[in-house]
Length: 267
Ligand SMILES: NC(=O)c1ccc[n+]([C@@H]2O[C@H](COP(=O)([O-])OP(=O)(O)OC[C@H]3O[C@@H](n4cnc5c(N)ncnc54)[C@H](O)[C@@H]3O)[C@@H](O)[C@H]2O)c1
Image 1 (tube, rainbow, N blue to C red):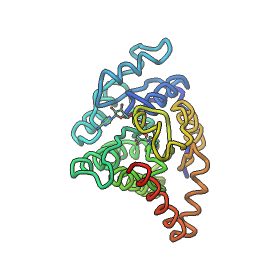
Image 2: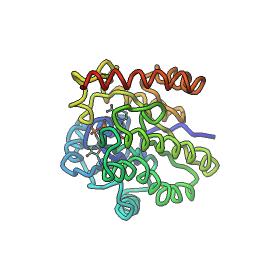
Image 3: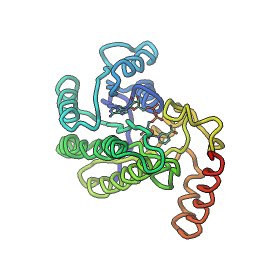
């Protein structure tokens, strides 16, 4: 039975917290009274800037940490270090992401995308979930994407790695609920962040309804409060997913048409 998460007095870790949705999640957790927010990012300076953007709170309560989420040893050390220095981790927001690889992408694009969007979550399952299970409770939030339910025609590595993230989140939720672990999966469509700043204007698909990161973080914390699995800040994604499941052939016919339109627009 999933449990709702109330941030007050909790220890919250956010990865990819140096920018965009991760920064908004960290600020939101602090605003909702978290005892400590640990803002992790591969870019430590950006994580520190996130702490500075928390109103009146650049104090010892909150911390910034350089962490490459695709490095298992670093993730294991971060978990052990935070729990030793601060307290047991209540919520880990596994949010770091990259948008790499046009079309099929390179071998490196696949390595990085799978490292950040899939293996990072696996490392949590190996090193944090057993600690949470011993305590009988814990919350994980995995930021996947609407591309993990549907498709991002521009990038195969992004689409496939995000589908993997959704599948892994569902697997965790099904298998660890009995241990008291509640899993939430955040699947936004377009959000105004650094990730897509260059692609937002003048590109096919630029008609996407781009949300502010703060609004996405607000939806995420509402869902966490209710113990919900799936968070869809763009409600239309639920309808797209229904149509895809209901008639895959019809869905794919539409995607093929969209792909041709994109190809001719960029030719
Ligand atoms: N922006 C969107 O439209 C959108 C839509 C759906 C899903 N998402 C997902 O939301 C999450 C956050 O993306 P964003 O839009 O805020 O992008 P962003 O580029 O603004 O932020 C991503 C952050 O992740 C960090 N990061 C990258 N690789 C890392 C690594 N190996 N270890 C630790 N940190 C790393 C970056 O330094 C950056 O600070 C991602 O998982 C992304 O795929 C974004």
